[in-house]
Each structure stands twice: as C-alpha cells, then as structure tokens.
Image 1 (tube, rainbow, N blue to C red):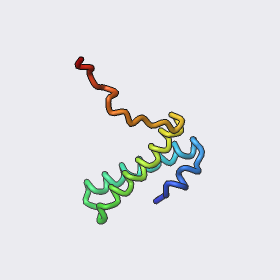
Image 2 (cartoon, rainbow, N blue to C red):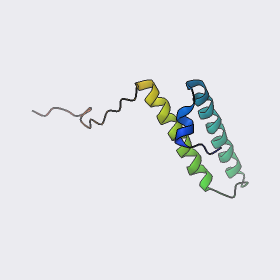
Image 3 (cartoon, one colour):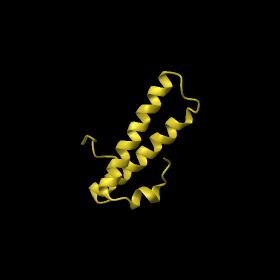
Length: 80
C-alpha cells in the first residue's frame, strides 16, 4: 500500500481520511504480528509510519489553508 505524495495529494478529503484510517489499521496489524513473532521485515514499520505522516501533513495543510508558522518565539516569555 505504498502511495507517493502526489497520489495522496490528488485524493479528496474523504478518500484521504479513509486512507489514513486504513494505514493506521495496517500499522496496528503489523504491531500485533510483530509481537507474536510473525513479521520478518521490520522496515515496514518505518515505511508505514512515514506514509501516515505524509497523509496527515496533507490533511493538515488542507485544514489550515497551507499556512505553516515557523515562528519559534510563539511560546517565549518577554524578559524585558
């Protein structure tokens, strides 16, 4: 279920949400299989987590209108 950034970005909101749920279920299944010793390729965890992060990033960008704040002083205290 490896999807690249462009194919995730082309999805509508409902399909993207469904894909996120699907990937999270797959990650849960991987964890369950790993705990029972049935998984051979542990790199699947990182790959799937990155896919979920990509999808969540796209969803967040859509919800915020693509505005990203890089202001590091948002939580700073004025020490005047």
